[in-house]
Length: 151
Figure (cartoon, rainbow, N blue to C red):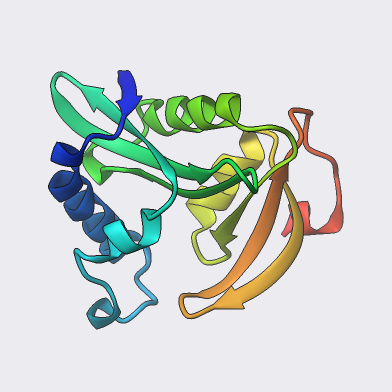
């Protein structure tokens, strides 16, 4: 997979991928609350890296340098389990300073398991309009055995 910087020509395809991924993965959220416009709004001011395989966009990651925060990581459902998410996550963590944080929906058990397998630790909890989430931190070190990591 090639990972490259976002270009404006990516916007329509990434908006579609973002919407489809959330509709499929966030089944507990009312679909009427999500739209194609969310991608542009939810990545404004962030660096976006795009994963491309065989000239086809397979995923993206967006993050904020000022706060060392990964905001979005999505891989098209047909491209999952091929290592693309890991590669995009690695590309983002290499561009940020440790510690790095992100929020992961508690109900998105697959994503929680993925991040923990990459050494991320659950350090806090919160809630938003899409539900309860874990605040996760990456220090570049193996995961500890704190209480939230066992949930």
